[in-house]
Image (cartoon, rainbow, N blue to C red):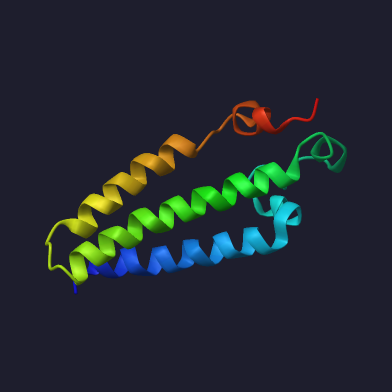
Length: 112
């Protein structure tokens, strides 16, 4: 088993654990989202924490599925480049979801 396969398997397990954490804690887990935890408390009250937490859980599940598929393809089916391709796909999805602008990151969760 190559290093990329191991990375895929370990990261998949970590992301499944995080998805489970967000699923159990629901809206309380929103404080764990980067950027949201640095907002003033008054400003945090203006956002839908339940929806934020649910979306973050779904993102973690998607990441775990991508990396898990790469680990399975690479390990069980001996496909040499399965983990490499899964890591590249995960990077593309990861950078699609990363926002440096606070409004872009949390604007859709603002309560009306």
